[in-house]
Length: 233
Image (cartoon, rainbow, N blue to C red; front, side, top):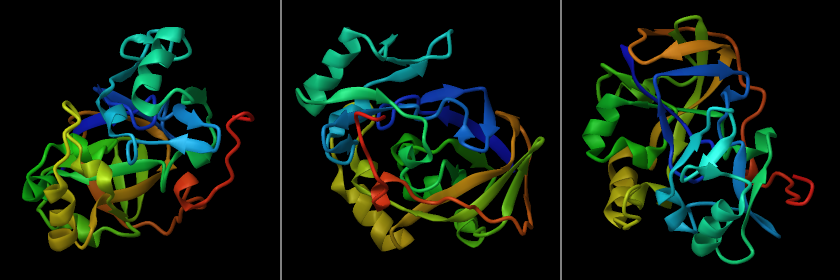
């Protein structure tokens, strides 16, 4: 097995940026989801505002998130977000663990993605592992992935949502994608993961499935009811 591809999502629910290498920290990929779209009563995501998923995000040379090549905290980026998410939406920087819906790292496998037959970007993984049989990921729970100096713990399979139905380029919806995930994958595809041992990983790195007794201490964020105060954030 090998690392087939890597992504970071500097702004939650916006497009991901492909990487050649990623620094894995105890908080997931360095620079991941540092900014989100906030409303007065809480965050808003691509689940309800599908157009957010089509807006590109990246990390500038200064390490700061960008929205469509613009500084995330500038008026132009704010206007782009408001056009999609509504006039009360604004971009907020928040680095707490609650910014991740479930776990702070998502790993997909090429065999499962090929069996589903969609653009892998619909699943929004941080890591795509290549050379994996279609059903293999379903038996990886509570084991670990050794990648270079890093060790990634596998928690469980990810329950999928409406985001998988949205084309990341056009924003068009295909409800059949989620129906198939439900019917053929019991609603779950790709793996909730966490970083046991930090390190830098690169596309092409070999990956080994290993045993581990380590267990994640934090699983779950806003989606499971964590407190949220947009002004404090």
